Image 1 (tube, each protein chain N blue to C red):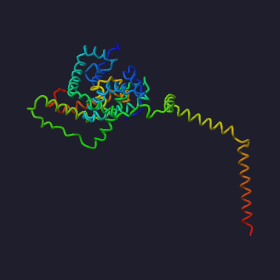
Image 2 (spheres, one colour; image 1 turned 60 degrees about the vertical axis):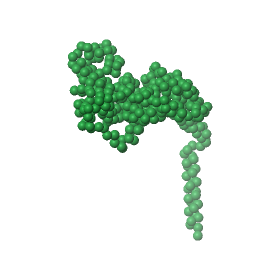
Image 3 (tube, rainbow over the protein chains, first blue to last red; image 1 turned 90 degrees about the horizontal axis):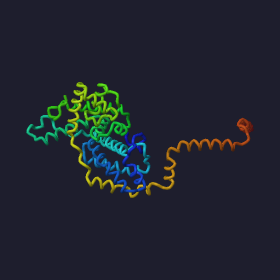
Image 4 (cartoon, rainbow over the protein chains, first blue to last red; image 1 turned 135 degrees about the vertical axis):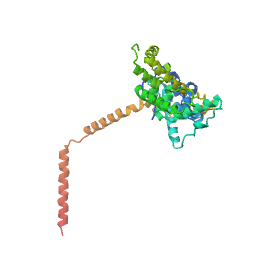
Length: 198
Length: 151
């Protein structure tokens, strides 16, 4: 779905990776290391937010950069930012993993009654985060990807739409549906959550 | 954008992007902020969106990748990016924009083949050739009929 050759949508003009891509295409590992250092954190964070697992996120990031190393030779600059393509490959890898995972149920989350009022604030926050993570994982793939790209990765609407290969209007629709679903999923548990969703 | 933003569009922005102005589309941000400053109803909607944002922000920031992960990327890289896969022919192919040439090359080969066929065609019309074959088949039929009738 997201995975292909180098992207072909217009977007990137100020691509910080462009000079290093040309060097890496000629086998320059140091240049490639700079590309990795600029993007590794963002790609790992994206994968962790989509998968809910840091270990899996690191595996995904490694796969993404291995593919990136192979793609530098055929990269056509000026058509998109390299990071947009990296995001797209990462989304594809995460989608594959989530589809494989779908057959096995999600880890059980603590029920509302299980949260003891005597728990300290840190544990309470962990429980809230866990429920939020569960709600995110419960969203349809495209809605989850849109919310993660725009809210957590803070991509602009144009970059996020380019990553998902959709129009900005379609992105807004995905975002609105995703946020509405999150609101209603979390509203039912609002007594345990720190935010007031009314 | 200098045009004022409608309440409806502002509501769409909040539904999609939430309450943080830095997530709003750049082209509409200034107008949205002006509406937020002046419109009470818009401000109420904004506060509701802010509550959901606050909840979403409780998700912890992912840990930074470990040094092991960084090293693993480099240890798994193939020895060289170019020497293993890139021959001079592949480089030339890429320089000639690669697969984009496939269709025009095929079309050119087709036209060349057709032209060569016309050029090498013998000086006999299709009708004459067909007639010759028909005559031959007739002769052969009568020949086999005679053979069959012979005791």
